Amino acid sequence: MNRRDAEALDAADPLARFRDRFDLPDGLIYLDGNSLGPLPRTTAPRLDALVRQEWGRDLIASWNTAGWIDAPQRVGAKIARLVGAKANEVVVADSTSVNLFKLAAGALSLRPGRRKIVTERGNFPTDIYVLEGLAALAGAELVVVPTDDLVEAIDEQTALVALTHVHYASGRRWDMAAVTGAVHAKGALALWDLSHTAGALAGELNAANADLAVGCGYKHLNGGPGAPAFLFVAERHQGAMRSPLSGWMGHAEPFAFEPGFRPAPDIRAQLCGTPPILALAALECGLDLALEADGRAVEAKGRALCGQFIDLVEARCAGHGLKLVGPRDLGQRGLHVAFAHPDAYALVQALIARGVVGDFRDPDIARFGFPPLYVRHVDVWDAVEILREVLETRAWDRPQFQQRAAVT
Ligand SMILES: Cc1ncc(COP(=O)(O)O)c(C=O)c1O
Image (cartoon, rainbow, N blue to C red; front, top):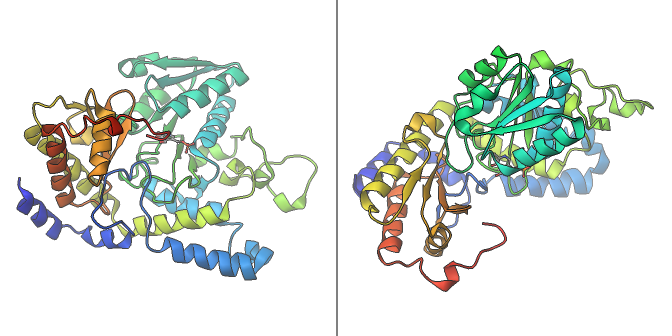
């Protein structure tokens, strides 16, 4: 492949028109949308209107007149379309970490007598930390096993298996249907963290018969920094599953102001406090954009971009100590690619200084994301050429690139 070939692929790309819908800085090759998605062009005007009119002029009436009170379900129903769920199975609330706590606690309550929660070593740290905290509180046991031992670790004592569908560092993707089947075979429940899946890969929650799921709004959903997260509870579990955070928004009738908690009979039972309306509006802008694209085309282009990147790095940057992390089979990956390098932090900083934004993950990973709505094949070509130049000139080997920032 050469640059011309990349240009030809972009010219034939049915998703090419989406790039202009984002407010991307000129000249920047942004390969970090799997960490923080860029700004859709609709977001700032929408927030401006919301702040000035709905909040500024209409004030408290907007809870009813502007549909604020229904926003968690309305926006959740849009996410449901992306993750392969029914409209009434997803709601937007809280952060991914908090939602994980709520659903994992709910899973324990659905499997009384079983006290084991199983997850994999190397899962995203917040997932492990939250499960640790819950296990301590609930008198459960958290079993953290190497990836290859996961299925064997599930037994008749297991209440819940909690996994991240696409691994945050390696990009490795679990076979959701197969693992969920193995979990169900032992009578346990499967909870999937879709933070690196939603908006990137075609949704499969119902097709895989998943029980529970959570995920971020600020990565491939382009909802903005700290966007609210979502959670999924399969319809069959909704009646019985209680949230441990029984706040008033999860009450069957929040405005009846009853003295005791009576859970909503549906997905609203997983809500806790007042929804963050500004943040929900920003998230909805990202979702409306994502929903215009065909999910299968998004996944297909993402795979092609990842494949192009892996092939070009291995062909053009050989001999500089880069080693692909995670599977080579694109069908077993999400839409980011990680290479290990002994000086990965400095390497990523040197790339950022040249306008190629990826990120670093401890201890030695340089990570690059390929969200198909705005990354072009020609960006992949140019990024690899810049990487090659950085490696060949050892441009990363400068003191200013060693200084660790608070957020990597
Ligand atoms: C797999 C996964 N889960 C959860 C999170 C973050 O959770 P929270 O939004 O609660 O900070 C991330 C952030 O990168 C992640 O990669």
